[in-house]
Image (tube, rainbow, N blue to C red; front, side, top):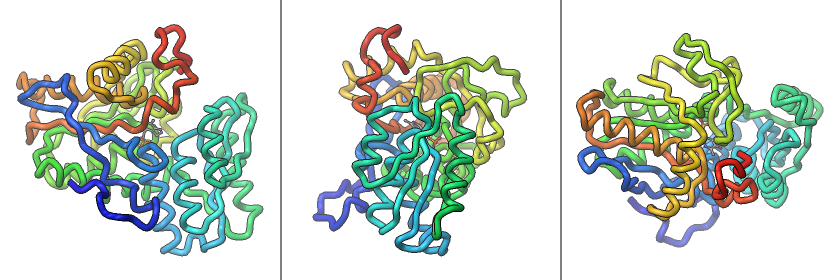
Length: 326
Ligand code: PMP
């Protein structure tokens, strides 16, 4: 795999082609590999969809150069869209409920975006409505809406999955990924299931999240600290196709907290909570394949480490479990 050794003309060219690294605490017979997405310029997996969605939307004429992208987002997607918008000659406005990470809002502003805060108690639904209202008031504006935009999953079908495929010479038995919008998992699942319909696919969510309602289960909704994955309203998760997954695995915050510490101390991986949840679930799938409990068409399990722990230090993720604000 090449990782950008040649001189590049723009930061846009540094999006993708991230390293794929072995998770050591996984069986030798069925190793787990993780894509290190903090290597992207905006330091998360969401740079991929920022670039991919905006380039396609410009090509299609959904928005013209000098136009504006308006997105309700609390986090990494805003940063990814802001990086791409700035380089593609687009303005960016993000509607962010107040309670979300101040660091992320500072980064969006530094990248040239405008941040409009909405009251936390009004929730994400209100932020979505406000984003559409702002877009309607502007001349040439578009709302990418990552939760329903097929380009989100397509970005991973076209970039993340083929990169993994090439790096592993096609030996992919299982794909395991935490679902926020579900874009990452859906794009990768579609790619590898087309290759081999038996590819084992597992969605990961924090315990207390409601993705398992897609399997017809009753779920007791609870708050969780793990950030970037999970849902409390599956109606919003329009991209998620339960027919593409074999299992949806909840991971408790306490296990995630311990795994974040272990990944840093033992493996030098400064990754955040969704990555730790993915590592836990992926290792479990790897053991299942090794022990013959899970049928898979390859001897490797693939996951993603979506972003870095540095983005959450102020929330105390390396302090005690009780001190971690989540
Ligand atoms: N991890 C982190 C840190 C994220 O910000 C996100 C996106 N919300 C995800 C995982 C999940 O990605 P997706 O939206 O593609 O399911």
